[in-house]
Image (cartoon, rainbow, N blue to C red; front, side):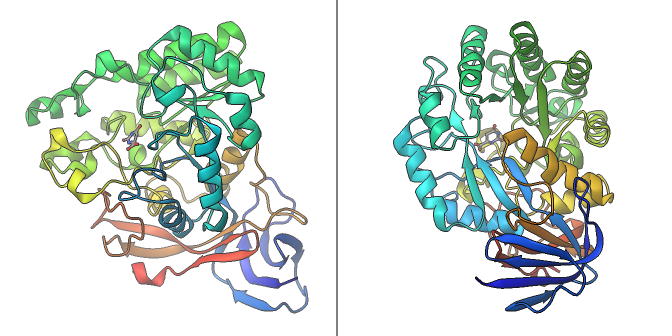
Length: 424
Ligand code: DOR
């Protein structure tokens, strides 16, 4: 079996015993030992001065395959994920066709076999994401779907959402809910407020998100069900979730880097790279998202990587597609705008995501799969479009100065990405 040794890195391991400046010896796809004087390996990588995290897990992304490979495909998307430090990703079911049956799920899994990151599909909660008829969740869960979602096409009916939550729970699974009331959203394209008025763009009220969060928290609480709230973006939504957690409701949630790194003033140039759903909110919401990530109310940072073709973005704001290409900037945005506390970063990118989806990860110890993310915490660079390997170049952070950079990503003992300098 091939052996690989990582030398001299600072091991960050909030849930593990071994931490600090240590070597890691990998044999095949597993971590064999952690310590010093571990002997020689077939290959050695000097990671001194760098920080070694348990592999990052992104519980919310869009890989676009099948059906929209002009935006992204599983190979390009997972390479972008690996460049961002993600060793595993959960891909949302709003593909074309949707991941709502065994054959589409099988296709995703087979394409993922040679990918640069592990791919855990999230199945559609309803057929064709239409919100009318439940999918065969048992079959999809048995194939490997880690959860079920209405992402991108919210379930409007409370009764259908309740049925989906109950049915998922029957199979030991749960719903990842996209919280958006389409009636309240109307034709909105950015956050409703002063900036939307100034720009003359139709607004998306915070109530569109918060009413649906309230509905699903009440369903979870009333019926003893588990729910995961996706891409939380408002202070009001966070307040609801925090209170529900205090009451013991079985709820977890995530937010995306753009919700703690940018606000709706960024839309002022009509740059459609800022168009995302939920929309960029106000500075007060940004502050609330940061507080909630740091106090544990928000469990995980998930990218909601939503790549689009330039022809869908370099157009009039009102007509452009919603979404931000997020894999390659998530970690740097967290280091730059949220925290430089390594344990906190490990919790938000690895420990908690692994717990939410019930997959291995979040800890560096003997015997576990060798999924590791190595970063240079001091690196500073300006993001360029050319550096992005995702097909989706739709990032509002291009041209911005960032700090903290992933330099190596290891999946099952395989070095799937090494670099970093090219971005500087
Ligand atoms: O901005 C978004 N883009 N939000 C979503 O919920 C879906 C996503 C997409 O699929 O492009």
